[in-house]
Length: 93
Image 1: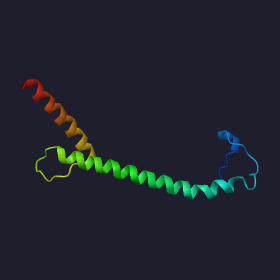
Image 2: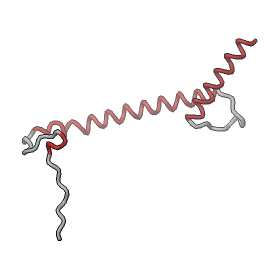
Image 3: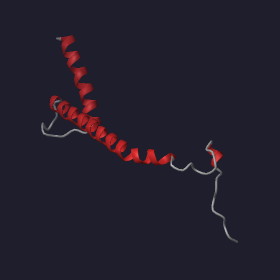
Image 4: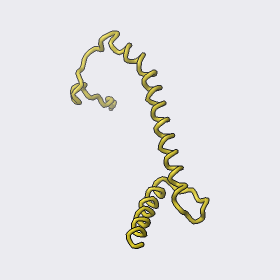
């Protein structure tokens, strides 16, 4: 027996069935590459900013050995622990 491919009607997920309107998506498609390029550039800038901040934070946290590069999660955990330790040092003198 021949199997028929699975087919779901468009409105099964709240989508309207029917034909597409000609020309409606052309403007959107033309904008998407520029918007995607701009969004990608923003994301690269954000990522670079976060990485720069982690690099700066790593320099402030004492590690053994001193040249060991901490992962981001290690950096956050050790920074939190170090801040807590410094707070205790201040309280206890």
